[in-house]
Length: 416
Image (tube, rainbow, N blue to C red; front, side, top):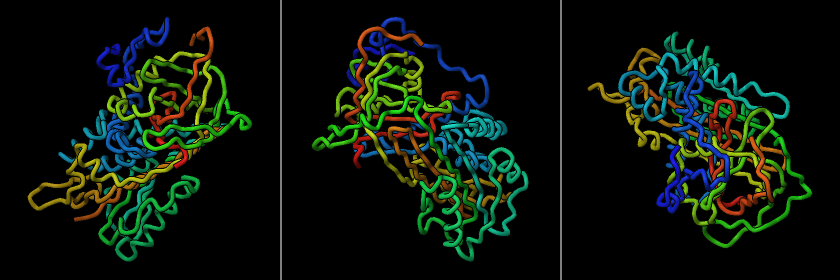
């Protein structure tokens, strides 16, 4: 990891100089994947921050999304892609593993993520919704069932697309404990729809160090634009993984069950946009790797927010346009022949919704993605640091074991 030069400091780079963080901190060597699941997490995190730059950076609004849900749903579509379509998808989605190994890595990751007990709950569910009577290839269906837990559920889009849409949305609502509703909007499926691939993620966990409700008080939150808003701030003083420089602060709040929320807070209310220019997986995960335990007085606003995105044009612009191009007679356009043996399928839409709520007890978050396819530590001495998140900040929820970023977003106004 590089040290932070004066020029980079002026543009709020996320790379810290070791001396700015206190004595005894050393930058760890780059993380080297020792297993396919680790390589999968690294690629997914790179994709996460690439996508953040397009969904959230520079926008003065609250944003939340699940890069893992999007990656998982697109990986299922990728399993049926061939040729240039597959190569573009692998590059955009940062799938560095061979096509034959990627499903196995997702299987291992999903099994590890779902193994939560006690005060933590994390569910990842997948499903295929295919046109009744359409002969999908047996090998594709077996791969979906075996590695993604995505059995084929037949629907009749040709006869009643609205009934099919309602069935898929009901499944998503159930798998996300009612937090994600109407994922697929009216008109997103029709009689030409042949397959819908869905992924749902639900997370609920308690802080290992809860906030006392009696200490929550109203205080100003200084948004980047406009007058300050009054927001309920939770507070406590304790030992946290923490680091700071003259441009930002970063802190890690652990949950029961081996996950954590990381909050990255710029020093100035109007400097989030400048910080976002340097928000990459390498920078952020490098920072997390050098956090050190310190006594911190925390002021964190309670917040609840949700987002919805149509991702097809964004993913296309990121480097995989062929997946969204109807196949043509000259051989151009999407090639998903690994699904049904024919070169007739293409992705018409990618819908994504996410929700998060943070309070004194912990966090509840959910997300879902639908891909629609059509035919045609050492303690620091001294007084506690003060972490007062009273201005726009970035947050992420991370699996501590793999480092995978499950949810990512920012809060510009906790009262919106």
